Image (cartoon, rainbow, N blue to C red; front, side, top):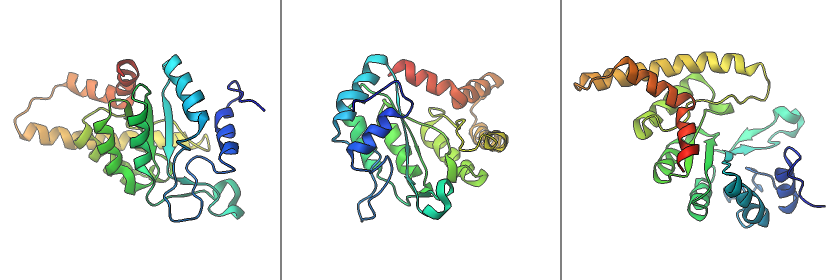
Length: 220
């Protein structure tokens, strides 16, 4: 059968079939780090990349999930790769410089390297604190590190959830964490003698909550 791009998830299903059952972000149980996508797939280079280039659409990657870690728990049995393959993201950015990539990592261990990679490629945008790192302590540490290394050139959080109710507490605690991180950073700036106005604060909050993404989509 052909690839039906009108069906939600059509590309992912076709890619899974082409990879003989291996899905995005899933490992084979061996020692090789799980890749986020089959980089040699014709579906990638001849379909997805070309459609995104033509339409100016970004490719969003969520990296580091192990599907069915405990199959007895069914949809609740997914886990996390301790160290996901960040080099795959680097290769994609190098190979397709005209394509915009959005990326978020599930493991805390990948966050620093992801920031460094993002700082090197103008076609890569980092976003959100996803799933197992959507905890206030981790959001604080990840956001602080991102601000220190990327300024406000990333998207702080995104509206993603497996259960709709999760959005209620996700944004409540995320906003609180962002306030604390920004207060901390502004205090450090002002202690060095830098001025920081209410207008600067509004600009930075807007960038972190969607403005940086809009700039990224328009500028790359």
